[in-house]
Length: 260
Ligand code: PGA
Image (cartoon, rainbow, N blue to C red; front, side, top):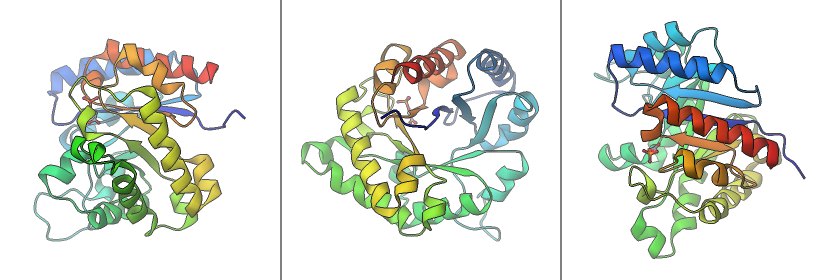
């Protein structure tokens, strides 16, 4: 049975960008995405200082924007942190939470990621909750136990209605920035597992939540990934910094959507 979920492609710029370069990139993405059918959502998650620029350049177009992290606190004496509500004030739609780089380099626990997800939802943002196993964990046969723990910690803090507002990104750590993507079959297997975990919380959430794949998505592998039953789009790092590549990946989502 065909599912009703729209495809979604979101760029994760990470800590890249300069005002002048961003302008060229955002304008090209906005213009290119404007020609795509509405069934495919497009977004970019930029470094916080560039939120205002994204708002000015993307406003009124069909590309949403967002941040790559939010504080676990609503406001207060937390030097250096950025609250979800602050991003919302700049028109953001998305907040990535629990990216593996933050889990690894900033020691973010599953509980902290769950709290950040709640803060993002409270601010009206769509959290893009990232989960994924390391190569050691995969080779030890622990992929499902690791990912199950990561997603369950988030779902435990949410009502069924809020769970349906999530986007979840499966990003195997060994595939991020390495040029070594998971195969479409490997990714689909984990996505089906995630879909079942969502269903255990709420059938409505399982039916609605977009499950993105991330990790070395490029124009030449995007379509085969996006054609999988439970892969609803992608979270794109390196390739989101080149408008030609990013738009080609968006186009792959359009094609896969038509064929799935
Ligand atoms: P990549 O990054 O596409 O450069 O592998 C994906 C991500 O980290 O979100």
